[in-house]
Image (cartoon, rainbow, N blue to C red; front, side, top):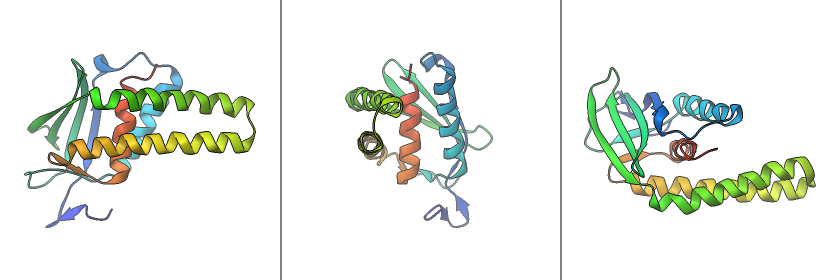
Length: 162
């Protein structure tokens, strides 16, 4: 994990929880997607809150009054602070991403492999765009690598998945 060490202290998330009250009702498939995203994130991530001397960290995500709340704690629960981000910049990208996901799953059942691949490429590009928006909005507050940004964007989407 390049860049994840500084003076022997690792900057990464060791625990992540999503506020159950913030989550949209989930099907078994959506719940599986959430669990996979959390598992992947915990397996490999780079997460460095600005002005914090070291980790590892616990992250509690919630969606409160149309604001995404990153409640950051040191491992063991010591509160380090909360970061609130407006969900407005994410609304269109999440909506478009979900439309592409639906098209992708429909294509898997009915379309030729070339069509499936084209839709999947568009879906991945949209996901990357959402992750870039998140990473950019966090940059003065929390430094994350590209993969961590992607996985966090997946979790943000999970607040809206139905």
